[in-house]
Image (cartoon, rainbow, N blue to C red; front, side):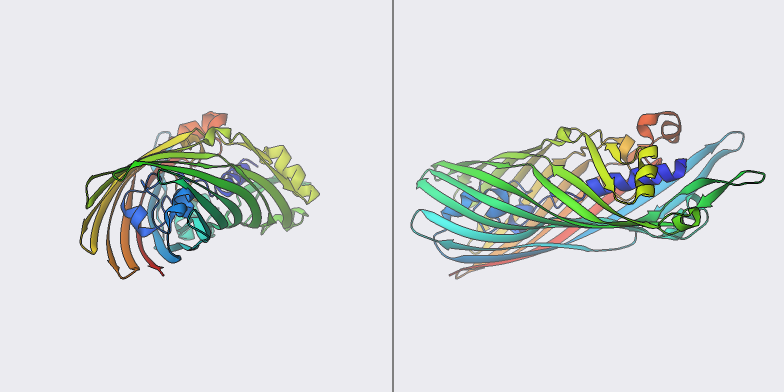
Length: 441
C-alpha cells in the first residue's frame, strides 16, 4: 500500500497548510493596495483602512468615519517535471505538467467609527488565505495507473475582526482585534494503489483506488495586538503580535474504489490545526514631506508545528491510516522571517509606490508536493494612488518570483524522512493585481 501511503501523506500535508498565518504557502502576503504596493512594509505606518490587518493600533489615528474595500486576484503559474532514473536505460520523464490558468480571489472590507477624540472602533472582514493549484489530470496519468484524475487544491480563509484602538497621547497608540476565522478546503488527487489478497495464485493483485477527495470546514479564534509610537512627525515605529489560533476542521473524505475492498468509500474526519504566532516590527520615515520610506521584519513561529493528528471516524479508515502512519504526520517546519521595504512619493493628489520583500519557505524539500505552492520568493511590488475630497483610489501589483525547488527521486525511495514528498523539479511565479477604494466622511 505504499502508493496509497504516499498519497495520504501528501493530502494530509496540504490540508494542514491551508492556514491563515502570514507567511509562505497558500496565504496572501499583503492586504490593501497601498500597503501591498509598498512591499507590505506597513506595520510602522498603518494609517489607512488596512490597519486592522497590519497593526490595529493605527486605527486610533483616524479622526473621521471611514470605509475601505480591497479586491485582489492571485494568479499562480506553476510547472512540475518528474524524471525517474531507469538502470540501463537512462532517465524517463513521467510527468511534465503546467498548471491551468486560474485566478483565486481575495479581499478586505473595513469600517471605522471614532467613538471620541481618543477611541476608535472598527470592524473588518478579510481573506488572509486564498490560493490553490489546478493541474491537468492527463499530465499525471503515468503515475495514476493511466487514469485521468483530478489534481486540485482550493483552500481559503475568511476572518471576521472587530477592533478597538486608543490614543494614549499624540505619540503613543495601542489597539487590538478579535479574529474569528472560518476556514474551508477542497482537495482532489489520485488515491494510489493497494495490494489486495486473492484466494488463488498469484494470491494478490494491485487495486487502483481511484479518486481521492476531501472537503472540510472549520472555525477558530485568535487576537491581534499592536502598538504605534510616533516620536516626531517624521518617524513612527510599530509592532504587531498575532496569537496562535486553533481551528477544528470537520468534513468528509472519499476514495472512489475503496468499496471494491469491501470498505466504505467515504469517512467523516476531524483535524485540529494550530496556526503559529506571528510577530512583526516596522518603521516609517519621512525624509521629505512628500516621501515616506518603510521597513518591516515579520516573523512566524512555524517550528511549533510538530505532529498533526487526524481522526477518521470510519473504523476501517482509522485502522488503514494508523497502519500507514497517516493519522499522525510530522511536518518538519522551521521558523521563517520576511524582510520588507517600501516607499511612497506624493505629487499633490497622486502617489507613486514601490517595494520589495524576501519571503522564505518554512517547509523543507522533503515535504514538497504539487498541490501546495511553497517556495522561497523574491517579490517586487508597485502601485499608484489618487485622492480627491476624502475619496482614495489605489492600484497595486505584486509579482512573486519563486526559486526552483528539486526533490531528488532517490531520496524519496531510500530515506523514510522523505517519503511524503513528490520527487521532481518545481517552478512557480505568481502575479497579483489588485485595487482599493476608500472614503472618509
